[in-house]
Length: 172
Image (cartoon, rainbow, N blue to C red; front, side, top):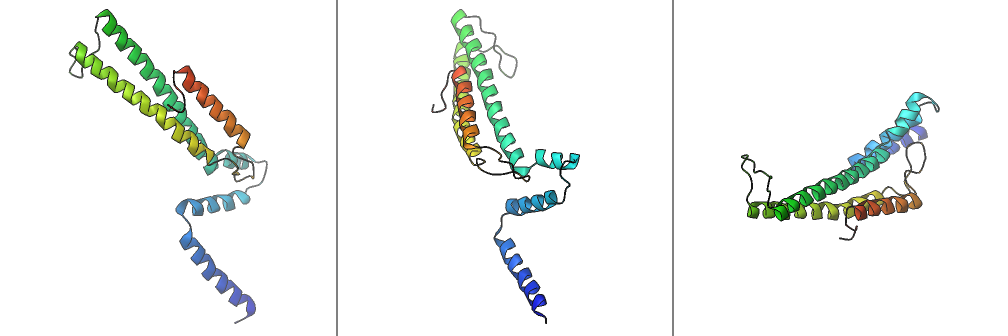
């Protein structure tokens, strides 16, 4: 056996051992990088691969979840305000699932439930913002930084403003 053949065989064994310790996500990321490296720079395929980078997409998904939570908080605020107005005026229009109009106690229970839902959305935002912190400093397949510390700090400020506009703080 030649020296080169020995090294290739040893290399294969080492690669198999390394692959055993990798998570599926790590293996997929390596495969994605290898495929990207074979694409000619400046082509549509190159730009598309950059746009669809796994880490960048995962961060966008997290940001989308935060946007959805902020939207849900707005919807719940509106619903709570409407229900409280109905209690105050005595003109209850909210209905149960079976199409019966709620009584005052049922409406108060409904309001309490919606406040609970809203509080949990607010609390979930802090965890989601922290997840995005995990993308800071990482690079996409093209070597471009996905998010810098400064961009993350600006994003946190924007999320916090969004919560404040809805009557909450990120630490609620």
